[in-house]
Image (cartoon, rainbow over all chains, first blue to last red; front, side):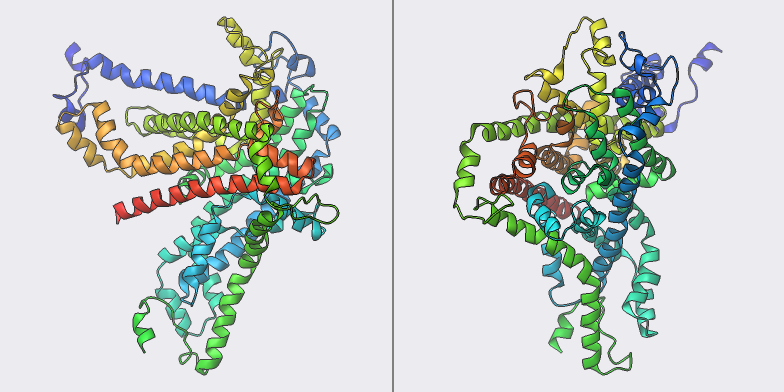
Length: 298
Length: 316
């Protein structure tokens, strides 16, 4: 009996590996759990900064600055959240973040997919050269061209406007290249049928190609939204008025020249900055991770 | 006729005759359509990517300050970039940052990807989601959280480490420890991205190869050395290069946590570009420094291009 309970029926692959595996039975049983414990420790360490943001956001000021410090608030309060709205025009910053990241994402999806459609589905003179030029521009980091971009935006009178934040990023080489690869892989039978029926290119684009590329558009959309929502340097450069900043750039103003950091308020603001992306992450988790895998792999 | 023969058969040819219009009208309309589709994206790329690239090059040879007339000053800005001790320091710091960040982030990402890919790990899916969370936190916000954790007076991490007898003091005010600290914040924020890329690469390796290696008596280490690493080689090369490029552009958490200090020990190239260009309004000089960054990135991207090119050749 004991022998039976100690040795549960093995899976076929385990049975095959058995003669070669030098591990003993007990190690094989607790091995995964040791592994699990080690991963749990790593995961907790990874989560620590996020935990600290959440808990500190709800701590009263006295507890935030208390020694010895504690992890979990003794008293839960919303003071930090009310204070962030008085210390910064935070409602406006939230709106700005949505308009900026959302605007860039929408424009880029439209303009990138239009260009990608032509590059993937229509043969024309110079299309190859154009594609090479676009792909080559991927190598230019925006930090290196920030000064002329700023000058141009300033000449257009777009500093401290949504135009200045959004338009320079309304199309990007990576998006065009990424969507072109996707469009190339879609079958062409329907387009050709539609063309014979006299459908315009725009109609084929809108009614046949786009609906079939929804997952890819979502992937690119998530990637673009997250990157812009989280960007610091861009809003820092193109907005000089507090009211036009994003959540990310606005929060950096909390660290005054005095060097005293109001951690509670800052964590409340940070939590608000993270929540929209966290909600998005919860709803489209699989797509989110895939988007990283595919954009990363290019 | 010959042109028709050389065209790939799948490609679209104008349905001039089919549409009932004359070939000339169809051709013009087709050109117009193509231009219309391309125009918005190309206009934006031209104005905000290609033109600025040329403009930055021109500015780098001038004393532009945003006011008054720009004067052509030859290579003076570049001479300053390569002789000014502060700028050399910023470049040195960027190299130091890269040398610390890239191996640390890539090794951590690979180790965790291997763990997540192991069938022996219970709750793999939960861990994958969990470890991915830093990716959605901005580097600036991550910097706020770490700044609080490491605060010398009220920081929790500082307090816990003291419990183990480790006194790290005020790391962000320490000229030696400030740099490793901002590197760690970036590693925390970015490893998840590289981990997912590795995971995607690992999942492409056919399980039958491991089975075969097992049959031949290969242990876990041998399987890693002889199956995983060679097949993951190109993914690793790719991740190494994107991590290096990311490191060259270090800015956000440094801006938040140290502002480049103490004593310029965390001043990086992008911090310096921001400082020179947007605070000191020395646009010509900042453009010269930008070009150094651009060239460095370009070289790395070309290396990456050949690495990924080789990958495609291997597959195809």
